[in-house]
Length: 121
Image 1 (tube, rainbow, N blue to C red):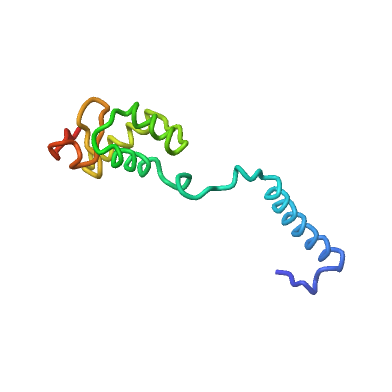
Image 2 (image 1 turned 30 degrees about the vertical axis):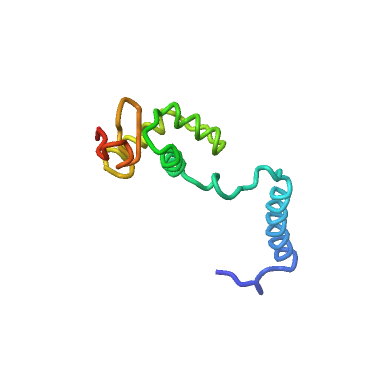
């Protein structure tokens, strides 16, 4: 173990210089970041599942996955990957959480498909 008193003046200056250079690099990276890339509030912080839940809630009934994807892009500016979304929705359907499947690639919120049941895959 060593102590600051064991360092020479030049060694201490080198250590401080390295630390400050690292801090300067970080600050310069922040300065270069365009304003459009800064995190926005709202939709940017929402999960894909939350967005889908909002879309289905506003639709008031079941939607085909293609329509869900279109609305996500139009309303939230999010381009969702079909396979990932179908997989995530299927997991929620199997867990009987929030979503039900009322047809082939047609999803609804539990209790919003007309009869309140929906097909559970």
